[in-house]
Amino acid sequence: MLGGYAGKILDVNLETRELKDKPLDEETLRMYLGGKGLGLKLIYDEFRDDMQPFDPDNLLVFATGPATGARVPTSGRYHILTSKSPLTGAVGSGNSGGKWGPYLKFAGYDAVVVRGISEKPVYLSIINGKAELVEAPDIWGMTVTAVTGELIDRTTGNPRKTSVACIGPAGENLISMACIMNDEYRTAGRTGSGAVMGSKKLKAIVVSGDKRHESSNPEMLVEKVAESMNLIKENPVTGPKGGLHVYGTAVLVNIVNAHGAYSSRNFQQGYFPEADEQSGERLTATYLTGTTGCWGCPIVCGRKSIVPEGPFSVKYTEGPEYETIFALGSNCGVKELDAVVKANHFCNEFGIDTISMGGTIACAMELVEKGKIPEESLQGLNLKFGDAGAMVECVWRTAYKAGFGADLALGSKKLAEKYQAPEYSINVKGMELPAYDPRAIQGIGLEYATANRGGDHVYGYTIPSEILGIPKKLDPYSTEGKPEWTIFMQDMVSAINSTVICLFTSFALGLPQYAGMLQAITGMELDPDKLLRIGERITNLERLMNNRYGFNRLQDVLPRRLTAEPTPAGPSKGQISHVPDMIDKYYELRGWVDGVPTEEKLRELGIAYGEHRKNESKC
Image (tube, rainbow, N blue to C red; front, side, top):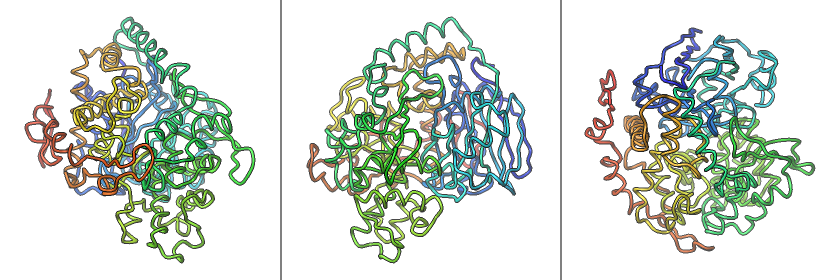
């Protein structure tokens, strides 16, 4: 077995209650590493074109990578995959930090594959190599912090050595934007994986263990980690005096707003005049009580917060992050930071993706503004841009499908379609867009349109180069070179998410550092080109599965608002997104035709294809 791996997968059948240990295939690891790549390959091996999100056969995969739990910076992450997302209809995907990933590895497994539907609510316990399914109908309905504490007490009793990944009421109620939470405040967000877990009646997975997994070349690893740590510490974003450590991800609020890319009022505008009132600097001066980081993280970007008094009081919570502040703040026209902290806390407790939640509320607010939703449907909600109280109330109503919350639970795409105004849902492939207006940042618009999991910024994160000038400055208004750069970032991030370490390291590190650390851990012969090739293979495999679900060029588009309606005011006034002018070049460079990889490209990457694929060819 290669270094850095536990060497086995736990296969869980919730219907039959059968738990099986399965060995990891070394050739699969050489082709896909772990994390996202491994999860996709496991799904592909059992892929069905007619899969539905809540089918028993919709696999839910929790996967670590070779760097998870290793002595490398930011090694506390894991990846989640579902065969089909209830939000997008494509392959579902999410990534989370905290300590759950390392603790699964320490418990003796690289991945957990969950299939079937349990008759009664259960939780899965994996402690030092022993896996057990436990019926627990009494924990169904608990919020995230409540069930986390309860299951630690029922299992090890040791919160320092135990980690819980769970769903809240939103997942139980099959909300399309429900996510999976771990360590109370860490989130595997987007694409509705929490609803898939809820459909299976699986409330939580508890992990704990003491087994460490040796690297292939410890001396080389020490050398490569030292090099990477120096780069992280010296970097102005990730270092001890850098923006992420000092102000958290919310350091971006004022930076992006100054560029005219901080959208407000459901992307009707690209600038929010009150942005400073919800910035990382303002959070630090008001509700911040401390900082926190994931397992093995030298960056420490997490925030601890309280709101001591008032209608939005919160005794303790973590966050809010930049994306959350945008989604529940400016995008809803809400300037009050305390309301955003409260709404974020509710999303954490109920297990809801904050970007999709905010995007759906903003969509509803515009539907009301444009007279598309009759007053009686709102059942008393004053759903107007800038109403902080209504925004907060929408969160808990959505989790429980209470009143108008049942409509919000559909997500913005289906909500807007219900009220016959689909143009007011700002989504790609059914997933609400994050906190960068693509009219002012051309590369991120191309990423939104072409990202396999929908309107996504982190799977091809062009913001460092287009806004911060890292590792090189690209003109955000120009389309020149953006197809090439978007492809590079998408493939590199696919590799990073299969490693699995934190994307924020890419502010300071490049492919040579990632390849060097991976080679030392695993013993594979890796260099930057080989690692990027693995990332390209992973991107294409995910695209292939989405093609088989019916996705192609028609879904690789931005909402018309962003390509036809110029930003009305602010620093980016007059700009539109030029994705239609870049997409053909992107496809040509990818080796795709109308969003579909050619047979030649799949052969080149060693990906088998066709309706009756049996095994994957070796590469």
